[in-house]
Length: 124
Image (cartoon, rainbow, N blue to C red; front, side, top):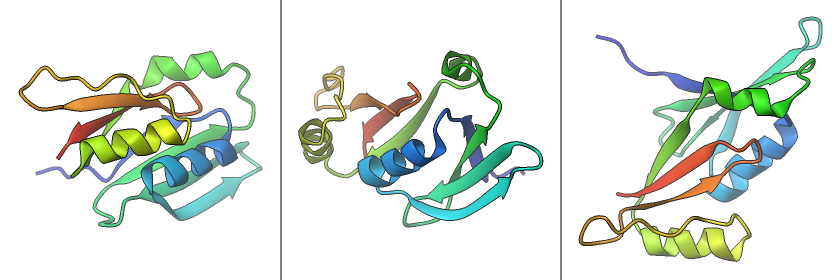
């Protein structure tokens, strides 16, 4: 049996991405490793349960951030109070999409991280 330990995404600005994932989603940085000799850095983030990690990969020599999107589609997070989360993201300038109501109750909405990755916020 396999267990997922992390999801890795490439980022164009590591500091800006760390701030976004901390401020918008409450994730905390568990570890950061800089490898200047190999021209990259990685940072591992997790939620309070620390059951899964997001690995942010920053390539110092990266020229175009548009190349990032060819390697990843989205991240999904659940939240107990979708409406409260939506208002938080709206009030703090994260420009959430409208809430999808394809079910009887609100189901999810999306925000984008600084690199253009879609973050799906789903009802718990």
